[in-house]
Length: 154
Image: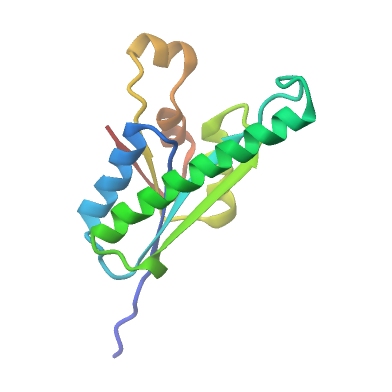
């Protein structure tokens, strides 16, 4: 009987923080380029409120500059995975611009569409008091994701 190959799809939700870099490094070191894993590194550019900028041109300039920064960061993160044995075809990059009242909601919305087997996030390192008051992206994802694994990398 021929052995069936199971692919596991991993979504790493990132920003430009050291905690996000640590999450990407963790996945790279843990899986060490193991076959059968597809990784998507995703960043959500949170669209500013409509009245945040004085003009539409200022808003467009900010979006363009932020997108360039994020594209560079995502390429750095891809390189971390490649340096840990992943092949280029097994790592994709995704950035999206959308209004996000809750970053956790935006990440979970992406998961709803794509059905990754695992969601990986870095822990922001909020104090318990701040986490209680503001909530935590990783905590919200852990509590609301279902039928998938959630890795929170500290």
